[in-house]
Amino acid sequence: MDRFDLLHKLAVENDNKLILLIMDGLGDFPMETGGLTALEAADTPNLDRMATEGSTGFNIPVRRGIAPGSGPAHLGLFGYDPLQFDVGRGVLSALGIDFDLQPRDLAARGNFATVDKDGIITDRRAGRIPTELGAKLARKLQEGTSLPGYEIFVLPEKEYRFVFILRGEGLSEALSETDPLQTGKLPLPVLPLDDSSEAKHSAELVNDWVKQARALLKDERPANSVNLRGFAMDPALRQFPEIYKLRAAAIAQYPMYRGVSKLVGMDVQPSGKSIADEFSVLESIWEQYDFFFLHVKPTDSRGEDGNFEAKVKIIEEVDAQLPRLLALQPSVVVITGDHSTPAAMRSHSWHPVPLLFWGQFAMPDDVKSFGERAVSHGYLGHLHSTDIMPLLMAHAGRLERFGA
Image (tube, rainbow, N blue to C red):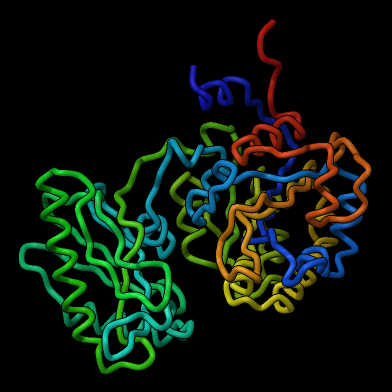
């Protein structure tokens, strides 16, 4: 019996409702020696009250010391071990924009980027161009590129991100990425990651397309180049509602997180444009579902921008909405992040993520505020992210006893 078989066997249905609130990139690190993290610096009376009443600790997204991508980090939160279920970003992005992905389609997440006259990357995100410009450039690539015998889809995702999908016979996801993940470097060629003829042929096709795309964009500013990441095909995962016997809803604005929710079988909701809009959606669908995944993106974006003060304000904005969530009288609430994105580092990091369980059976500890140093003394200690869903189920009385 594997982990999912066990959870399915023990899962029971009742009227208790569960909320998983994720502030993307929540974890942080002080900007200077002796300073506070963004979470510690934020004015969060509601989070602090919930921490006082509940249990706290940290979650480890993948393994200690590993800085995760958002896709594997979210799969871990949903109970899918990222090392076992390694799903490329391309599939998540494609599903996130409601693309009808076919079983053998090859998908990748694209970034519009800025390069100098020598082709060296000066901005991996092209200044976070607006979504409207990203859509215009995606259309230009859709109409101006071709690969004989294959169908190409180039679709806007959000801001500087787009989705590249290749449809045809003999494709492989065993491909390296073009993004060196640093500025000041040349883009990388796509290489086959195994010796199969499919991988070699796929690498040739994608390199051809990237060459065409960069030629089309060379006179654009600031988005005069592209990079591709996360080549993947649909892995046909076992579905979240079936495993846990939950009617599950996802509320997320950003396409990638909508995609990972859809991949595991959640019903993805319209989310509006603001954090307050997301809480309004939660209120509007409260009677229809048992489990609610509520995702807040800007904490991560502000961390990646190195904007400490802006990250603080996003955390405070979420805190101000929490009375609306608690007024719904959920049985158990978990608040954490998928990973840490310290503003001091401007990137995802390996630091553990603050974790809060709140509800009737959440064991109170001596922690009185929700911040990195405070929760290091919490009852929960350091949990692997895949332990969060079973604990959520247990706190809500939705798991039977194992054995006689």
